Image (tube, rainbow, N blue to C red; front, side, top):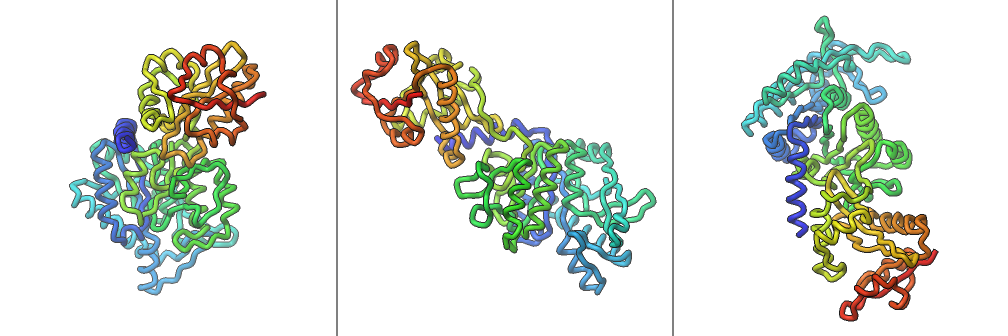
Amino acid sequence: MIQTERIRDVIRYIKKFKGSTLVVRIDDDVVDSALFASHMHDLALVHETGIRIVIVPGAANHISRVLDSWQVEWKKVNGVRVTGEEGMNLIKMAAFDVSNRIMTRLAAERITAVIGNWVRARGRGVKDGVDYGSAGVVEKVFLNSLLAVLEDGFVPIVPCVGWTATGRPYNISSTELAVEIAVALKAEKLFFLGSGATISVDDYDMPKGVALSPEGRMAAISVAEIPGFVEVNREVDNPNCPPDELEDLLERGGDACKRGVTRTHILDGDVDGVIPAEIFSDLGSGTMIYLDNYGAFRPMARSDIPAVLSLMNPFVEQGVLLPRTEEDLESTVADYVIYEIDGGVRACAALHAYPEGMAEIAGLAVDEAYNHMGIGPELMERLVAKAKESGNRSVFVLTTQTADWFERFGFIPAEIDLLPAKRKEKWTKNRGSRLLVRNF
């Protein structure tokens, strides 16, 4: 059943993202890795689903090696590589070499890629007494030209070099470049793919309530949560993704979301299949940055009924929930609340009111893959609060297997005779459900 739901998720996401734009910043450590061919194969498959792809290769390691081999001096100031004009030709050589490797690998997948100059740059100049030399920033993205390439079905590859209007080249941060291109294209997704970029509870302190995967990976973080995460993890010693690099990715990813990119994702290039898993599933395989509306509670609509029945079915088979029909849910649709992630129903429950001043929480189900996210407890607290606000003197549940869980929320065992008359008619000795009540 769980496998069936995952397949449905894939189909739903293929429909959702067909025709959308994905910008991928690929670090050159990934290009040098054993999984490079696998990631390019995955990008080719993603491209074939109708998703438009733009690739921005990072070339930091290659540039460092080339400059060092030619004994050209360089240094990092505030995370920016600083070297004189004599190093720029070598920087271009290294940047275009990485881009060519990506283009060649895509050609092996029968995907036509084009390396081009779609960016105007300007020099960083002198700031706080530091002459940034060949380092530049993005001044303009030539959007119409870039869109023309995408509409022809090609994959644009944008090296981390930009030129001024007079043809002078500058080295641009690939992270900044990817953000500016994603913003210009109004991309649905921006990926930062780098080696060792897993953000896990094993390495970092997590903000309260942040979305975690079952294995403890931070599946999602809101833009508002980023400063707090950065502050408490500033001293974390993680050689795979140093604090300043992770902070840069998080803050630039958050900035992209503020400027119109739907979602930004930090992906670990050491994980095979990380790209399609991040696109075609709710919890993905990396860390998603979002501005709002990642997951939300809302009233159930009639169009949700098939998904809710599918969600309930495993619990019905286990004997945890009573069977419900489509007609049952139709007649009580206004009583239900669901939790939705990107269009997928991951939890549901109902609050049924009775004339005796009692309300029942029923039909509570949470997708097993999302149990760790605290959706069930939050849903319970919401319904208990709603029951109280509606003027009920108590709220109750009937359960066969989960009494201990409900007791965590202040429910205590009670006699079946306390049930409202209409609900008592449906209670059977054969099922033997226990009654738990919480009084207000």
